Image (cartoon, rainbow over all chains, first blue to last red; front, side, top):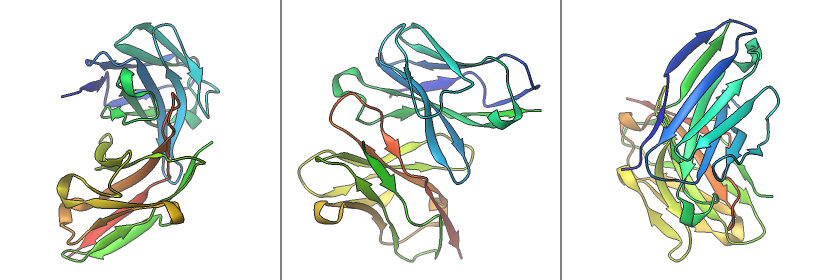
Length: 115
Length: 113
């Protein structure tokens, strides 16, 4: 079974802190994605990556950056957390042979609260 | 670019009743289509997917969906809802190529006794 894990289920941080959200997948997927989920807005794509050291902006990249140093790990970074970044963050990955327009496998999510 | 509309934000059904969740997509070619379910506090789980071939697809947990090209729809159905089906349901569309899935805003399903 494909497994996508996220480092924390719940996280509470202070405004201005630097925050790292980690995602690891164990199936050698080349494509990885970060979404945020807010009530009434569904899933919005923040960043995605097709391979190590590659990154592409999604629909709402402002205030975020990412790092992909190893194929299995994709990190989302909030350089200076703000209260409007309080949200559920979901990581996903995608088998390489099918391309990114195919089934994505999701982690359990990290609920981040910024105080 | 592709887009997805889920017209119903919240639906309430009685346990044992039938269910249909609506999904309309916009895409110029034949899309990849997906339904995901999210239980409270959890990640998304794939219910079913359509790539090509038979337009009626069967999924897990007794769900099915029908691709109708003429209506640009991919509605999700279940003949008899169980209380454990209460969750949020997301429709998604993918293009043929290396672009991410686009998700609808979701439909929250409540099940009453």
